[in-house]
Figure 1 (cartoon, rainbow, N blue to C red):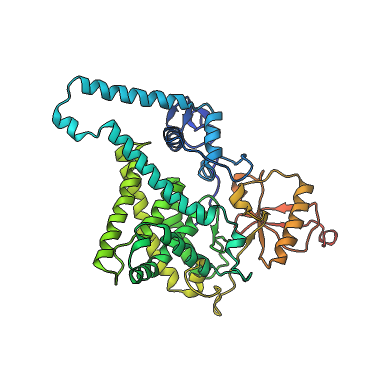
Figure 2: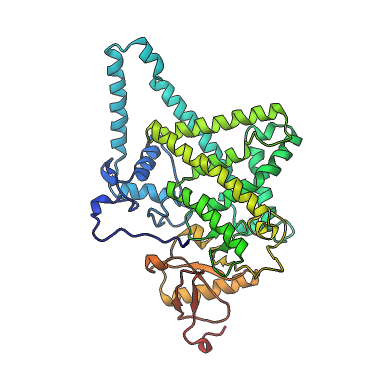
Length: 448
């Protein structure tokens, strides 16, 4: 089965009016002044209704398409505005809804009908509480990861590199310390709970970091791509991750808020054995709160039926994550790659596993976290590669990865850069089987 994830472009014969002007996905009609897909319609409506304020971590020039539209909410919202979506149209819609409800009440709805329908004040209060809850979960995420560089996360106070396992354990503990009611339960119950939930949580975190790129981004920031050269057991694990977890979430175009809710649900697991009945009850209440909040959050931009269906699709991924986690833990040399077991991923009976490390534009974030592409001329690109590679080589990193614009969609992906072959003027030969490798056309001229 082919697991290469390609950036799809619309057929030439497809009318431009059938496509969302914001991301290029299939449109469902004209909404708020522009032809838009259901995802961008809901995103814009939610952003305006909740008066959400976004920031871009990069240069406010992020690429927005259907595969990367969730990568930067600031640039996505700005593109909505630039492509003709009007905030006042949403306010007019809200006014019409309120006017309709008031008119119905003035016509004398029956008591039974009015009792079964929440009042606008209740709706607004529920939506506000839902928004605050979701924002609190996202704040946990941002405080732990968003403002920290991976280089800092992977080194302890003595400058010694942390393993993927250490990084995952620290992340789970910090999440649990800020998540109610985990921060308040008995210590013994908390230890038992985290032992059971740390694995699925860490795999979900890997999935989250990999959702918008054509490979797996491991906890230690290295890249793992599908390759026929991998050992059979690793290839089997990758296949299950792609087919049963990553692909379903990609089809849903899952957003950060939904990822945060899934993480909370992973940790609030009342089915863990060995914990007290009181803790089980508190965990069930916590889970119910997350699910109800997510339903209210989604219902602000879609019908209750669609919100229920989406939540069901999200929840169905949790058992798959647990099954895949168990598969990885059963084979420590594979599990250690994902931070689920101690070790370095080596097995005497298996060939070496090919990993790559992304070249960094700055100390704060790797290329794939900043922008899907870079617009650089050949000579600038070559000089940048040389400087970055030599800097990364001093850190002991493996083959750096680099993303470049201008390649056909079928060849889009990372570029693995071998050391010591170049100075400038590289000829790039892309490949979609493994991370792409550039080769010097005249190696004797390009020795460092």
